Image (cartoon, rainbow, N blue to C red; front, side, top):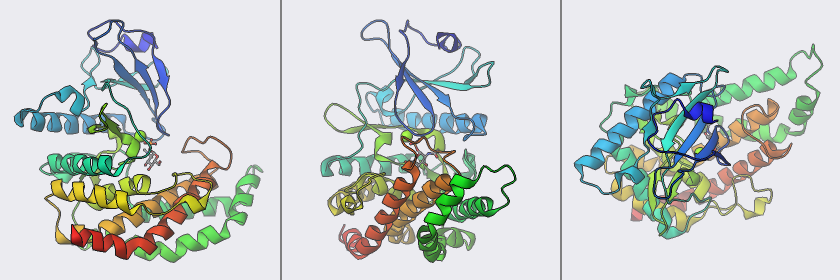
Length: 368
Ligand code: GN1
Ligand code: MG
């Protein structure tokens, strides 16, 4: 790994990289400074099976981080190094290094001291709502097509359903090599899930339809606003939004919904006990309050669709986990064989809970 580090334009001596177990997609390492008080780094191997256009992805991150840094400078903010990610280029001035084995590496300045969390308190949720509202606001003056889709159709519900249909077709198709047995059994045992998904198809593709009709616009979105993609300082205040691989054009309410999917859920994303899963309305209210304060650019329709965004993202995640389960677990890192099914069921239950809570969510938004 020191071989890799040699290619980056770092300015101080560092110690051996340590693996950081976060995220389902990339591999991350902390590269600690040798001397106290000097800069440490975060080294990441980009999963190029998932991110096929690494150039485009890194260009996106560079555009977004410089745009935000400029806004912070204009606003005369302090501690800018901790408030926006800082990419370290290679010695040749590139945004990433491609090793002879064909791996793609990038290096950030490590934001510290900072922690990430899987759950938040209502107070932290309100501040995080402000942080994501500000993030979208800071990017609102970039034309939505200034960035590429680092994963084409990433949050496109029609496309995600199409991928599910293809997975099902593949499982049911000829098994010339005799390798489909496990996946067939999986599909056979999950007919009720397929039916459940089918029943909601039309409703959940509404955003794409409205976009085609010209009634809904796209913004630069984060597209992975999970709780654990925000870094908090020692006092529990959000300081920096991380995991920018998926910044791209999208619907604003889907960023809102993805945060609620992970934070306003009394259970875990992969909770094996479905009775744990309910909408946490206190977190919902706190986050919404912070978000609406900062997201001043929302149209009435976008505001109206905020509760829909919650359901949409949980439904999308149900479909994505389930598709991966039927494909034989090729996309998400799993901790045990049935993990993707457990995740599917937990997200499915969350959608049902969000359907029940829809009216309450609406009245909270109206009140705020
Ligand atoms: C993945 O890498 P991570 O864990 O932050 C995924 C998101 C999903 C999420 C589900 C590029 O995010 O889209 O919502 O898992 N990222 C990608 O927890 O697919
Ligand atoms: Mg992440």
